[in-house]
Image (cartoon, rainbow, N blue to C red; front, top):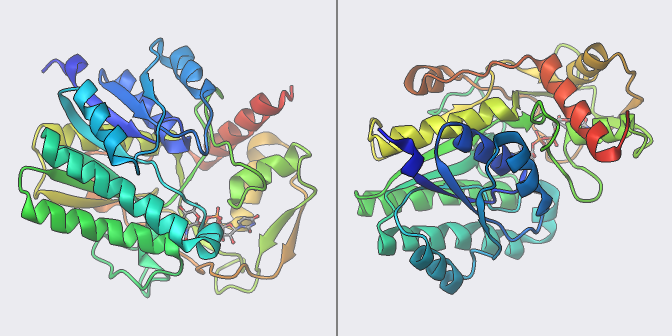
Length: 345
Ligand code: UD1
């Protein structure tokens, strides 16, 4: 099969996971076309994708909540084989403050894409979902069958509702096939340090806050809670390398295009299968880089679950995909990226 003709629309393609996935799509011989409103990313990402791959992807800047503009896009670019839908707001805390913005942006974008899939015969969609749909599960690790829990935030609820929207739409329209990928905690950056996570303002997530602390931008990393029921008392997550995660998207696209799925809508957990505590991350960073992380234990952060990590057997077997990069190499890549953007030698 000649994959060079396969066009894939990547919404949010200049963002953190979107940019890494665009690189992997190009590496695999696809033609990614990016739509991004640049609300949380920068246009220079396109040049850096070109530096890595030798190809600058096509790019359109607009907001896909605007159905008219999205329709004009599909009129312009024909024969799109698949969509990977990353474009969304993703800050849990902000979603509590601005629920309508989250519901509007995260739901209308998917609804508009599905409307266009039907109108322009785009057969496949991969949706960025999250382990947040599991809440604090009773049994660990979580499989795709672990029951979802009531969402803790509007952000989490948009992931749950979007999965339902996909299920219902695909049930009613068997010509559309979809895959939801439930990410655990994506971290790290491309090994070239040319693309990575670029949080606006004070980072909410652990690893960007940690690397900014080491870079001298933040004074100290707060470790949120040391009284959890875990071996060292700090909360446990499944931290997945962003390049490993991106590669799973290419496999998902191939599975859809080649119609290899077991059903029209499938769900896969994307994690490493290993739970690491906050202090494991601090220690892993120090081991990988030889640099001490200034940190202190503070109170728990409201809304955090105690521990979660993935059972990845289904993705391993069905997708033939497995997280490969060690936590040390991943944390080192995050530090190299931070150094690159801050001009630190
Ligand atoms: C959350 C969401 C996830 C979302 C992600 C990105 C939930 C359950 N998870 O992940 O769906 O994709 O945000 O927005 O809603 N920590 C510190 N100090 C810090 C920052 C974090 O100790 O300065 C700790 C947290 O308490 C947590 C761990 O580090 O135990 C990971 O936190 P974070 O990186 O924010 O991700 P999640 O909250 O797990």
